[in-house]
Image (cartoon, rainbow, N blue to C red):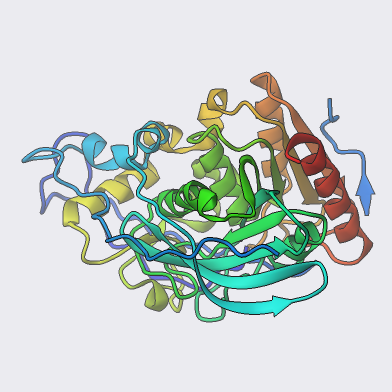
Length: 385
């Protein structure tokens, strides 16, 4: 997960009672970085038990989450929309996929730059459609962190997307809000990114060549965290693959990289002091900003937000891959995170496969990458195709 330097978080005094400004505060100073860097496989340490899509006008935008739960909202009311239970009640606003341009074509698939609506925002991304006759199964591809100043649509998913599209899958890779040419919108604890991915899932029926009943999900690094959160909210995904994922427990993420950056996200990436994976615009109400900072420091609230404590909602097979050398730099994800998740899934009675790759870092290179993608393809062929 590639992470830019970020902005220092201001102090905040927070209680579980209704918020009152001017209260003496605790100082939260965190540093966070995350990266997606290019990088042999052994048995894991935990034993493994051309067709053209419909192009339609984008519907009129609708408002996103508001912050007026009551005249004097409590922290719990303000943070509830970003919890797992709150997101499960979210009124997702989606529409149809619109093709902006064709990026490339070959004898196996065609690549398009797309956009689609998500809760009033326009989100960009990349779609690849096999040239053979459909309908095709679909894989949603969730990229890891990139500094927004260097990110281009498809970064972090392009190699894997091409591999899967060449084997008969439509691939859809959302840029998420605030990346690529997408609109900027608030996102607490990946919630906005998850909303964008689920709204992309809702838009799949607008692709004539797609089979919306056969959908899988793939996520690298931060995208692995987005994937796990989506799986606790939406039950339509048939199988998921996690590649060097961040922890499914946000307490681990914040302990390593800190809470999100306050204010302009592009400026935040230039200053060390916070994790710019989350988006907390400065024009959000003060109460909402303070509720975020409280949640980021409160262990009970973080459990309400973290997929790890809601694995009972996950009822699909999951395959997890990680390198033994990952996490040695702050930008990587420690191997204990995928091991912890795998054990948690198995303890909850879920189907989870774990593969470790000796000597590999955050992103695999050479033969280990092909081994990883071959396992991924076989897994999706079994559970999705």
